[in-house]
Length: 84
Image: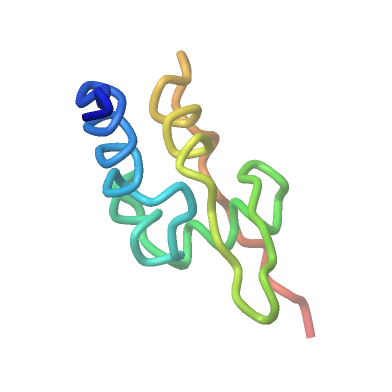
């Protein structure tokens, strides 16, 4: 009977069922405790990386970790009003 490495199988299973590597805008903003509007402003400003998959934009979990570990707070997002 062949020996199986159950530790490796358990690690593989844990990796397969772990948290997703890419998050939706809703999930990403919840992770950071910010609104979706603020998230989109941060994306627009280039402060948050995202990936476009078809027509769907996803956010890497590593980006949420990077922002959460940042030493300084995010700069306030100020929306400039258009003058008519």
